Amino acid sequence: MMKTEVSSIRGTSERTAPSFTSPSLQSIARLALIAALLCAGLAACGGAGGATASDTATLADFPAAAAGNPPGASARASAAAAALGRGVNFGNMLEPPREGDWGLTVEQRFIDLLDGGSFDSVRLPVRWSNHASADAAAVIDPAFFARVDSVVDRLLDKGVHVLLDMHHYRQLDGDVLDANERSVDPAVVEVRFLAMWRQIAARYKNRSDRLILEVYNEPHGNLTDRWNDLMARAVGVIRRDNPQRLIVVGPTSWNSAADLPRLVLPNDANLILTVHNYEPFNFTHQGASWVTPALPVGQSCCTADQLSKMTWGLDVAKAYGTKVGYPVFVGEFGSFSAADSAARVRYSRAMRDLIEARGMSWHYWELASGFGVYDPSGAGAFRADLRDALYGR
Ligand code: BGC
Image (tube, rainbow, N blue to C red):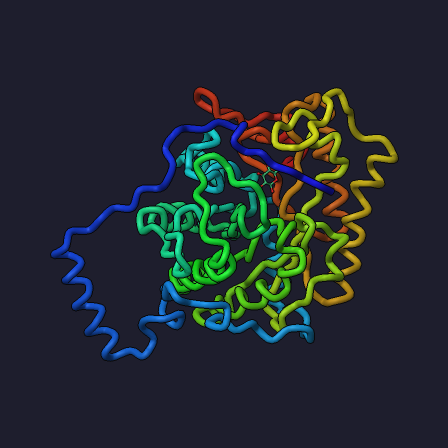
């Protein structure tokens, strides 16, 4: 299912690139001295072996994890997949080109919603690529890293599982860039993906094992034929610092269940599989400005035909997971607010029941924006019918 997004329509501002804080020369000299002393004692400095890849790094610096003979999931991976339960995506917050570009920022009141007992887990989409240097080293902006740390840590403090992903690196898929997004030299697009994972994995290696890393959201386009190789390299680089951390991988065609058989799984027991399901697409995405051609509003849900479309991918995912011995969860489903609200409630309940009948966990797309189960305006309130359809016990 083609999902062309033109996010510039979602709201913009004119600032072009993230601004990095420039440290004084004196502090640079001090840092350089400390780094030199540390490097004298540790072999792992500089080049792609350190926490930051060098600006001359190539794919060869990021060997792929062995793949093609997966052992099946560890008990820990299966238990964590089950514990994801009924989750929510903190969408349109950290995955726009800059936080705030699409009308939302991560607010403490959103994080505190986890106290209410509705959400078992959170998926946190993050657009790292627009906050990293344009060269092969892709050095992640320290201020942005600190911002993500603070969100991750506050979410983990709520006692839930947190799925941290890499979202919307547009050039990696070959997509048109969003407003406020910088382009990079095509020669370094792929190596940057791995250089960013090198840093992210090193940064979070000591966090709770409730922090799960998802390699990339909805690979498609240019990634279709490159995904198995790059995904195996990303798993390889994550495993350097995180030998046991759970990693989520999903198939191409926007994480479509139909592409699961194309996925060449790494030989790693600590993996969980993910699929997304936006069927029936002309219902869930009616009136969405980022879908081309635009889908007309007025579609209802859920006829027998629509229910069978919703079910198909879930059955495929379930059967595939059973065959390969890994748990699968539904990382995204949801309906845009242009649909009739009673139909959205019916759709949401039906999807929840269909997914859960197959023993899978899920994350609703998303908390507080165009698909939102929560209305952030004013003091903020859940959309009660939608919340009950999704999370009612
Ligand atoms: C994308 C969002 C989009 C949603 C529904 C997600 O995977 O990241 O930007 O709104 O799908 O189309």
